[in-house]
Length: 422
Image (cartoon, rainbow, N blue to C red; front, side, top):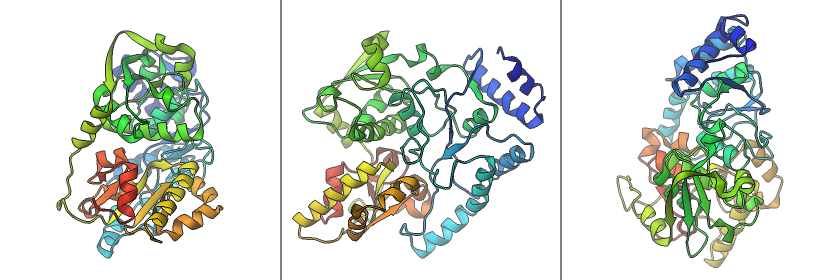
């Protein structure tokens, strides 16, 4: 790999042995994928995926101490994925004891992240690009991020450039200020392998459409047409829709970038010239979406169990989505002659988003319906034996993919949490 003088100096140890090892790791990473050079990071902030203080992650904490002691701190401030726990989220005594053991290093790890350069105490979220959080890259920015749903949003909706990095590599790039040049950082790597034609009779559920595409194209880049019937510009509603859509493509497949004709930055500029010469075509109609949902496995021990908990917000909800859910729940409860939800429901959003939302009357209304507002990561709450055996429902395809939570479309979930049957 050809390095600039500064990059070579770091590799040669002129900024310390620890930084040299960081650079060596990135060089080896890049060479594995055929990269011939490094490219400077231009985004203002980084984003880390490892946010949870699992007791078994001792090597990570040792590495963080080594970085801190060796002066290899992040060259840019960063946000980080959500914390796994908050006291307001329901859990029984056994679960509480289990969580205290499982996440016993959380406070210690939070202290390490502070020393390394976290943006603020409110910067724990998978939706760091929300205005309230302040980590919103510009079009063309080169990033060193991990977190699949954040990477695909940054690449697709914002037009930034970032590979699907793994945890720790995201931090390493921020430390030395550069990343290997390959994949989704290159013009060629951002061209589309698939033309996806959406021919549904109504606007498809974002999570379901993203799932169908992700499972079909896997890690390839899709160019989606037919969504102009439902969106004409990237409004707040459209951004929230494609946030959830992208998270499903990334978790049900491994999509790091998608183009939406007439909407996303590169599709607006280049249109169908983004399609590779030998692209493949996939048509999505009502039947495809119906079959996609039917084929989801349900891994509850008791298929007829009454749900004990519902999660909405994986990835984290936007302010506009919180407002929308407040109205939808309120209207449904009124129509059914009810005042409170029949199933404990947790809605998650970034701490900074919740801080602003709690200033509104809608927040008081939502909580009066029995909704718990939290900043946690539902996935990290669920992904353990104590909660994995619980009958939990969700409208998140990402949460369905990684845990035992059972997926329902939004309207169906809304009916269930307001007294309807499964």
